[in-house]
Image 1 (cartoon, rainbow, N blue to C red):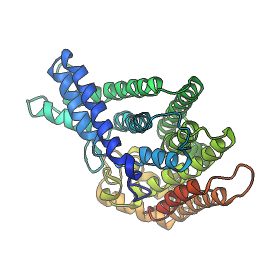
Image 2: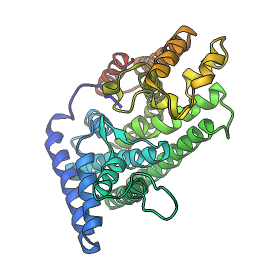
Image 3: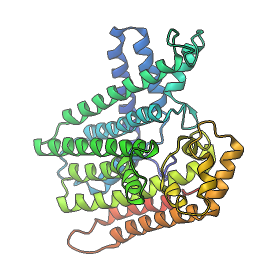
Image 4: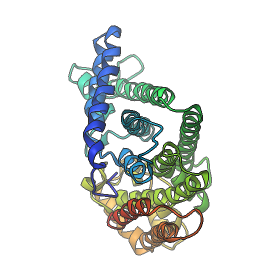
Length: 371
């Protein structure tokens, strides 16, 4: 995914964040050493991949907290604030690992993902990428297993960080409740995504949009914004406002990702070209196209795991021709307008000016992100 904002992490917390992220990963790697070199290597390879992220989510959390904090009476130390930001990034990467296994992807951020790296290492030792029959080893199975287990371990690490934050009990419980809600909602979104692609769930537009919001908005925008409101001791009404804003931002972000995956270039989205079309992803693009005269032509190649470049380019042209691209661009515009309406609203629970500026910057970043 590309970043919605080009700004860097909030000034004084950039260096502490990077130091804490590296420290947490080194500690986790050392804890793996008693279990042998293979398990230790898994952590080393994971660390290399995590450190290459765009840090969108921790950036938003730190920016929002900086806009909301009460300097005279903070409830968390700077170290604990930075630890929460690290946990948010680890949560994101755990999702990426599981998502790559579910989707069968071997590329992430334009480079081989953990599945591919592990598989390639084993394949270099003579183990085939895919098993020839049930009696042979399978390098891809090794890679996928490593990614699933590492995703589980990172989820555990995230819970440990949230639970060990030195804060009043009501703050810590509120954060843990938010984390629990976020994980449940994101998993529900991923389950819907797979169910839609596999034909287990009917691809109606409201269902597709709910799926898009659940699997992206919840942890990419709502979690950072709501967590910042909680640790800055803001009223519950303001937390609810940030949740609504996060929903708009997240849905726009996911819809843009869908456009980029079909109409963008691999360097824009970091995944294989036409991967969504090969996997039969039931996005809002496809949902619209299904009800147009172009659908019989689109349906012939949509979901073909062996989709050639020429076929992909033809599908892209048909999806643009039938109006699906323009339709989704309109949905994105509605969500961004929803953000602008929320931050412009005045009233007893209106956003502080500093937070309005932060959210406005992210909204502006989204406008320049579409394919």
